[in-house]
Image (cartoon, rainbow, N blue to C red; front, side, top):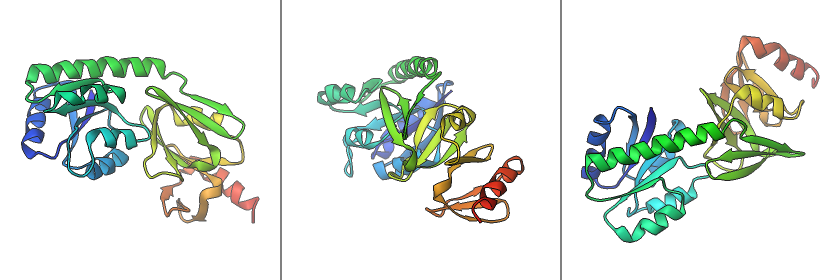
Length: 238
């Protein structure tokens, strides 16, 4: 199943995409947005595999929006102007749909997305490598260096992890497990506090009954299995 976000400032274009998605069993709509700001917020909240994005929009073009994302999903651009095709493929777009397009063209793009997702998952068996003070995360067609100090916390999302950073509001999405990542991080600097959360201990500012608070006011749960390790860490610093 492809989890899809659609982005277009024209309500009619959004309704057409929604209708096509309803007729395509391999695709699930996760959100419909009329601006780049809406899409950015939704990408931060949900797991999105692919983005269908219009190029010409009043606030920020689809091309500029995709370029601004640190870890963009797969992208299919939709536009009424064929002149943008070259620019679209320069940002590694999977496909380019020229308006008006029909259901068969849309479903053809979905098949390309399925193929690309399968390739990513096959290549993502070991997307993390380490140096002395940083990790390298492989995402799509690029490798991103992340300093340990820049990691605030990591969240497990099924087969993916979200790496929440100090330096930017949008987390990195990596096909990897939290357990394996914990094994790659330096001991004494990071701590698993829950089956779904791992924190940078230098960002910890407060603990409560079953929760911790980080320096950005994020409040995260502490699992029973991980509470003794957290208590031991706190005791060693009292």
